[in-house]
Amino acid sequence: MKKPITFLLGIPLLAHTSQAAVIAADNFDYANGGIANQAGGSGWNNEFNDEAGAPAQSPSDWDTVFGNAPTVGGNALITNGGGTKREFGGAGEGVNFPSNEREGAFRGAGKWFLSATYRVDSLFAADTNQWGGVSSYDFGTERLFFGMPGQAAATRYFGIDESGVGATLSTIPIAAATTYTLLIMLDFNTDRIAMWVNPDGGDTESSYDVSRSYGGTNWSTAVRFASAGGTNVTWDNVLVTTTFGENVPETSVALLGGLGLFGLLRRRRS
Image (cartoon, rainbow, N blue to C red):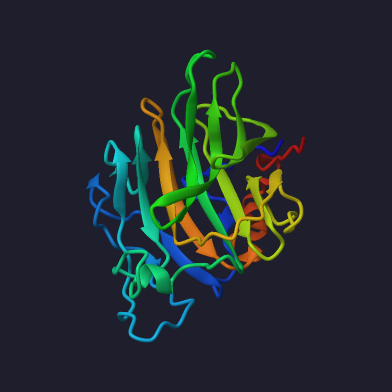
């Protein structure tokens, strides 16, 4: 299992590679309060498809999709008994032509990666189902789920779930009040979904911690962040790209070397 991210003097010892393939990013630099209708960050206005007569692209915004409205607190997204989603396309939403959401959709082809930091404050008793994660949406329908699928067990594990089909769990247990970096992949081209937990520069596109074959031909139009009631999950540093390397943090060797603290960053693999 990979160790949780180590922070030094409030500075994460990680840095993203170049951003050439970025689709969207959001660090939730909003005032504390509801996330609904916020449209900051960068991207979220892609035009993967060219439909004549479609409206001009502009950034999409965050929408509450169910339950308790997710909020922003301390420049991070917080979910607890509810969910929020944001489209890859612009502000015009909808399945019918013309809409920005159609323009920005992955139409059963291509691939995308999403990375984000993830922390669940507490874990329920073993006999109570608990879940929290990020999903791929096909317009108004959740298709895929990554993070902590629903589990009622003494130890809960990271995993992925195809709605109505089944879940696959990793061997990596989830610890409460611990910050992880999750990297997820939806690859229509090779019919695979996958997730890495705390990826680093030694990882590759085939070194995932958990994966499932996936032959779905539905569209991927948006991502949703959500968690069960009583499950307080904090999200930050959301980055969506079309290239694996864009989302893989690398150890800042220069910073560690200058401080003489190489020993602070330790990692174990299961």
